Image (tube, rainbow, N blue to C red; front, side, top):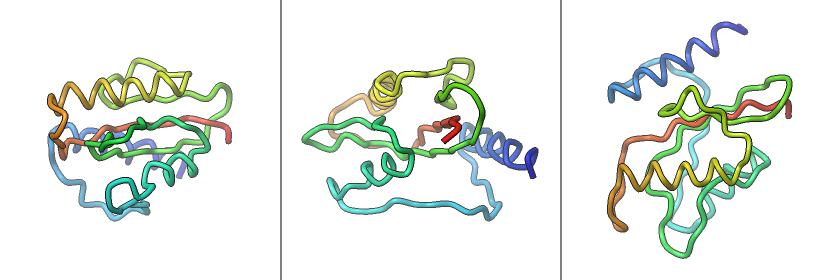
Length: 124
C-alpha cells in the first residue's frame, strides 16, 4: 500500500498534464459551492494552513487537485508544474497559485478547467 499511493498520484499527474481522464475510482473529497461560500476555507481547515488566495472578488479561478502525504521531517509543498521545487513557506504557495492562475487565465474574469496540482508533505 505504501508504494501504491505514490504510483496512483504520479498517474493522476500524468493524466492531468495530457488532459485525459483517470478512470480509477479512488477515495476523494470534492468541495463544491457558490462563489464566496467558503470552499477555500474548508480546504484550508483540512490542511491546517492558510495557503489559498484571498480577495473580494472571485480569486479561485482554476480547480485545485490537492494531495496530502504523511511524511517525516520538514513540511513542504510541491506543484505539479514545478516538481523539482519545494515550497516551505505557505505565503509562497499562495503566490505560486496566483501566478500560475494568471499565466493560464490571463484576464480578470476568465476561469479555466485546467487544474493546479498541489501535493503537501507533512508529519501532521
